Image (tube, rainbow, N blue to C red; front, side, top):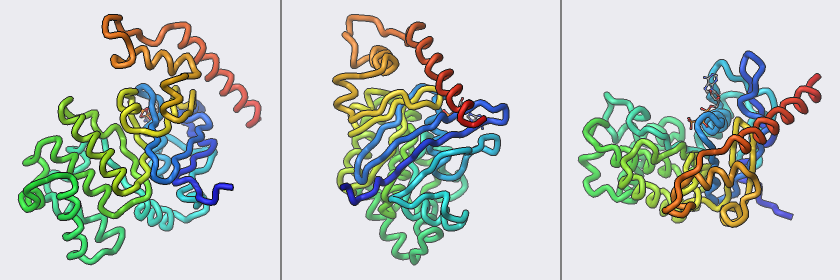
Length: 295
Ligand SMILES: Nc1ncnc2c1ncn2[C@@H]1O[C@H](COP(=O)(O)OP(=O)(O)OP(=O)(O)O)[C@@H](O)[C@H]1O
């Protein structure tokens, strides 16, 4: 028997729009303690929606109608709004896609980094300041004083993302949601940032739900992976098994569309119409089954 609960356990998560269409179709996934779990899918697959459901910030037009989300064995549904916010604040952190919009342009970096530690976790200001300095060193920022005193626009995109990574790890969360954290960066900086996240993850033993559309990133950073299409889980596997023996035609099509997994001499293949027709049928079957079960 496995006595240690999953760090994050999502089961049967269904979210619905006012017109009745489901944007998440009974999604289940598990992130084990200390592992990186990749959530991969094309634009619109529902990756961000899962992160938002976890953080309790679904858009007003989207309702979670079914399913459960548990953090280290605690079902979020069983908590009141304030207790849920406290638990999420203490156990999770977010590395966002776009570091510029995630930072307040009119406030200096230092106070923005320590806000979470002082406001949500109640740390004294000096402890928070010291922790921020430690974390800036861990993300290889050589002039911490300059960065602490800077406004976001005074830093490069890569530096801003380092700052947000430092802030995410500062309170030793159990789970970090990394929402396409390298997408907004230059290609050369992307590699450094990915390596940095991987290094910190190993050193701190933090579990990460790593949202990405890039199978190359999945291969580099994750131990397990969930492939999502139209809010539906298409395939879930340990990462080495996914690449060695992909089970679903859609996963194989995504691989064929990713440069490093194809013969460089061959051209990249978009997801073909046969695969899309198969997916459409699976979505329809899943929706019919759901409608039958819900009258
Ligand atoms: N505020 C909203 N109201 C209604 N539907 C929405 C809203 N935001 C997103 N959607 C829809 O929900 C579905 C999932 O969107 P989501 O943003 O989670 O996809 P994603 O996989 O994160 O895509 P991307 O990689 O482009 O961010 C899409 O069909 C999208 O059109």
